[in-house]
Amino acid sequence: MDLLHTCLILLFVCIANVDSLMFNLPPNQKKCLREEIHKDVLVTGEYELSDGPGQKTNLAVTDSKGHLLYTKEDASKGKFAFTTEEYDMFEVCFESKMVAGGQGNDREVSLDMKHGIEAKSYEDLAKAEKLKPLEVELRRLEDLSRSIVDDFAYMRKREEEMRDTNESTHSRVMYFSLFSMLCLLGLATWQVLYLRRYFKAKKLIE
Image 1 (cartoon, one colour):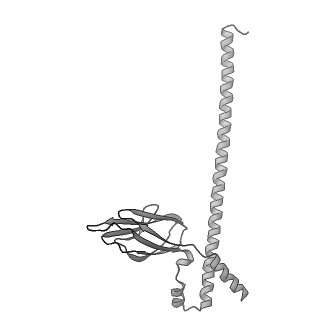
Image 2 (cartoon, one colour):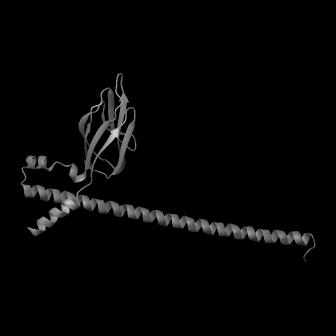
Image 3 (cartoon, one colour):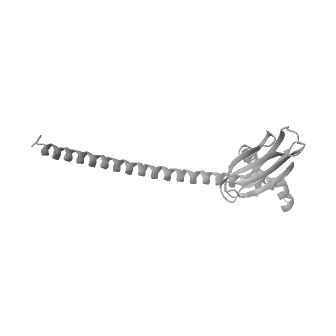
């Protein structure tokens, strides 16, 4: 029982990131939120906008390549979900536009984004697979452990890439320095030989 209690504490301490925020959106303006997310990660979002008479707010979720993952015209309240195909930067944009007779008041936007194990509905999973509460928690811990392992693997991969980049940069700098030294030595030797021939031609030296 102590082990299970410890695991549950670890679960809530190491829980996946949850991004919940609120901000004001002035009329005829666009605000975007960006976030980097790993590959093969479920992302869910729930949004709600306050009333804005005469205003139309569009919502668009895109990746760094401009692919449209979710779009909603005249958005007021709703949810969206998608699974990432690769590690990328994702952008959630709210754009407000005034219509005829509209009022120039800011709209309050509430956005709750979840990804990783927090985006999964374990209640629906328990109903679908008829799992007991303890089995649900074990499934959640299993997903959390897999997420932590994937994060460590990703960090190790990035560390290897950075090390390779540093070694490559070091080698290029070293070769460039050697090339520069050889060029300077060659130029200095040519200058000495040229001045020596010049002075001999002027009979200043023998």
